[in-house]
Length: 160
Length: 393
Image 1 (tube, each protein chain N blue to C red):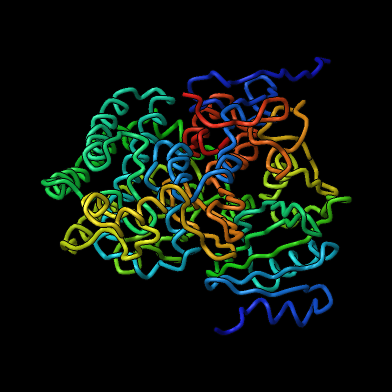
Image 2 (cartoon, helix red, strand yellow):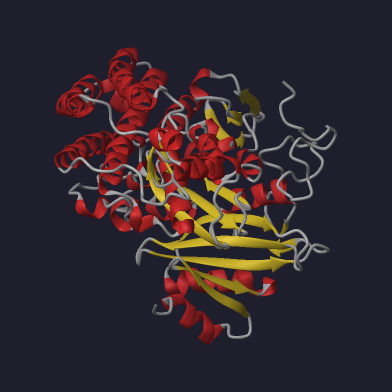
C-alpha cells in the first residue's frame, strides 16, 4: 500500500514529532508528540487541506504508560481523504493544547473529552462539563470508573 | 438617556419546539437574541460506557436508541464498523447489501418526513404535519414487517441481516416509492408558495460554507450552504458508487430555505436509489459465510452439532476481532454518523466513540441565531434537524 500523502509531508516538516505511523484496514494513524499538536493540526489544515475535523475523543489505556490517547479524526472535503492523529497523554498530567483555534468544531468535542475522560485542554475558551451535570464528580468513561456509578454495588446479573 | 438592559430567558428542556430535551439560555435585547447558550445532556445514558461491557453482538441494540428517527442508519454505521474491524467487508452477500441500501434510504425518507412535519408545525403550518405522518406511518409499517419493531428495529446484523424481506415486501416498497415523489410535491404545494412560510425561513439562520465546515456541520445542513459533499458518493459504502443519484445543495445560500429545498430534493433522490436497488435485488443469501461471526439459521442450531456449537459460542462468548482500530462514517439523514471502535482483541469493544451528527450540528446554533429574532430560534432549531437521543447518547 502506498504511503498516505499527508504522512510524507508530515515527516518532512515535523520529523522529530512523529512517534509512530500505523496502517490498519486501510486507515492511517499517525502518533505525534503532545507539544506539537496545534502546529501539526494547523499545518495539516492550511497546507494539506484537512479542513474538516470529524471527531475528537479520548481513549483510556488503563495500566499502560502513557495512560491516555487523544484521537483526532481529520477529513479533507476537497481531497476526500481521512487521517487519524493520536497524541499520548500521561496520567499525572492529563492535558493537551486545544485545537479549537484551528477548527471551531473542536470546542464541544474537547468539552466532551474533558467531561467523560478527564483530559483537560489548555487555553480552551469554555471548558465546562457538557453531558454530565455541572457538579458531577469523576469522569465516567475512564476505565477505573465503575459502570454502575460511584456509590452503587456492582451489577451481579439478574436475580430472578 | 434610556438605559440599555438585556433579559435572560430560559427555553426548554420542556419546550415543544426544542425537539426533545434541549435547553437554551437566551440573552435578549428586546426581541433580538444577543447570546444563546445550549445546555445538553438531559438524556445522557452512557451508551459508549455500556458498550464497553457488552459483546459486539450485544452492543448493536444500543445503537437503535441514538437517533431514534433513523434507527436502521445507526445499525448500518455500527455493523459496517465492526465488519471492517473483523475484515469481512468483502464477504457481505449482495442481497444483504442491497437490502441495506433500501432500508437506509427508507430510513432517510422516514427521518426527513419527521423533520418536515415538525419544522412546519413549529412555524405554524399544521396541515403538513398530518400529511407527513401519514407517509411516515407506512414506512413504520414496513419496519414492523421486516424487523418486528416500529422504531428499535435492530434489523441489520454484523455479517448481513437479521432476516430476509417478507413476501410481498418488494412490491409494497415499490408502490410506496412510486407514490412518494407525488407526496413530496404535495408538501411543496402546501409550503413552497406559501408567503408566510417564505417570510419565516428565507434569509433566516444563514451560515456560510466556510463557517459551516469550520463548525463541523455535515449532511443536508452543510449542503444547504452550497458544499457539494455527500459520503454516499465521496466515501462510498454498501456499493453506493454504483447507484445514480444527485447530491442536492438547495439554493446554496446557507439559509433555512436552502436547507429546506435540499432535504426535499434528497427525498426524491432517495426514491430513485430505492428503485435502482429494487431492480437489482436477486434471491440469494443474506448472511456472510462466516460461521464464527454470524448466528446460524435456527434449523441448523437444532439439527446439527456445528450449528449448535457456533450458536452457543457466539451468544455466550462472542467473537474476537484482532487488536486495532477503525473509523467508519456513514451519511445519516442528519449528517455524518461515525463509529470509532478500538479493539484490544477481546470480545467486547475496548472503546466505542460515536460521532453524532446532531451533536456537532447543534454547536453551530449559537452563531446562527445570534442577532436574529426570538421567533427565528424556533425555525433554526427545526432546520438543524436535531435528535437529542443522539446528542446526549
